[in-house]
Structure formats: structure tokens, C-alpha cells
Amino acid sequence: MTTDEHCWPPQCCAIAFISKARELLLHDRFDPKVIAHGLDVRVGPGDNNPWKLNVENNAHLQGARPSDLQNKWGEVFGSAPLFSFRHIPFSTVSFGLYWEVGAEALASGLVVGLGFDYSCISGGNSASHVCRVEAITQTKGDSYDVSIVDDFQNGLRRIERSETLEPAVRSVEGGFWLVGDRAKMHLPYALPWTA
Picture (cartoon, rainbow, N blue to C red):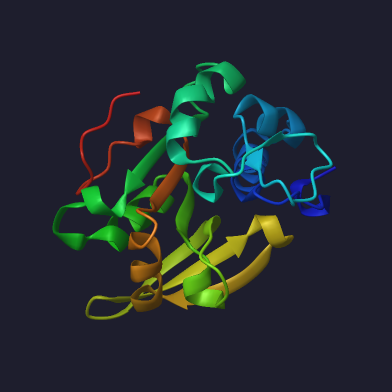
């Protein structure tokens, strides 16, 4: 079963992203339920919970945060250098060159995700979300078109303007989620990184 065939439980957008990254990079299909349990994804008390994930009342602690992934990645996936994880918050990118960092990550062959407040582009209640980035194209000046794929919503594709995404990312202290070769995760304009 591919990630596109899953009906994802609530709070599992990070698991959908990671599952797709694993499929793209390693051409295997690691059971997403195992990933969700290993990374301790938590759902809300009223959420549909077919995978029997831990329940969390505090909405800010539901789902999977980048810190959860960084802390538990090795336990779930081992220390394989070709399947590593790095989070680059926008607040740590020099000179606001976010899209240059993302474009460089894509060009180096990493699978790139973007964590942002979904309500900023869709309306509704504030909710942290991660989508996969397929392309970043400079349109004029400091403006970019960002092609995102929502693996949580069965690969729904859309193009968003950088002017729309930047406040959505900053509102949840979000940024880029990188999966791939550890050696390629040292990027210009991002803070130095150690695995």
C-alpha cells in the first residue's frame, strides 16, 4: 500500500510526509502505524483514532513536532546517513533567505517539507501542518511560487505565493523539514548542523 492509498488519521500529516519521503528516497514502504507509534504521535480526545495512538488534551502537543522527530528519529529508523532528519526553523535562517535555503535543499536531492499554520491558507482554526515542497520558483524580486503537495490529503497539489506562506510558517514557528542524506543537510544561510 502506498502512502497515497492511506486514509490518514487526524494529526498524522508528519507521518504522511515521512512515509512519502521514505518511499521516494529508499523505495520502501515502512508501515506508517509503526512510524506514528515510534514517534509518539498524539491525537485529540475527539479525533478518530484507528491506529490507537496516545490521546492528548492539549492541542499544542497533538501530532508530531520537529523536536519529537529529532529526539526519536534514530530509535525508529536507525542511524542510516541516507535517511536523516533536520528541521530548519525560519527564525534561524540568515537575512530571511528562506526560499533560497529550500531551493538549495531541493536541488541537493533532499525531500523537503514545510511546517506552517494551515488556517492561513485555508481558513478555519489554527492548526500546524506539514506539506512536501516540490518546487520553489522565483517569480520577481523576492517573490516565489512554492509548489506544495499535501501527502496527508492524498497528494493534493497547489501552488502558494511566498507572501502567503511566510506569515503562515512564522505563526507556528515553523520551517523546513528535511529528510535524506545527512551530508547534504549543511545549507547556506542556515545555522550549522550536526547530526
